[in-house]
Image (tube, rainbow, N blue to C red; front, side, top):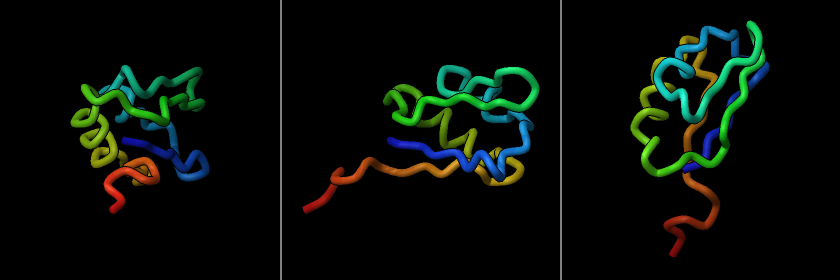
Length: 69
């Protein structure tokens, strides 16, 4: 699983940090850091974090080529 965060849209509500602290981290009051390639054991937490984002700044997807015929 890959994630992308639209940092222009992100408002620093930090819901993602609370729900998936191994993937998302807030530096200071507004600087969000994240791991683009999500460890398999964090998939569900990241899906919940993306759903909880008030501004829908987190995009979740599969890496290119995964599941391709």
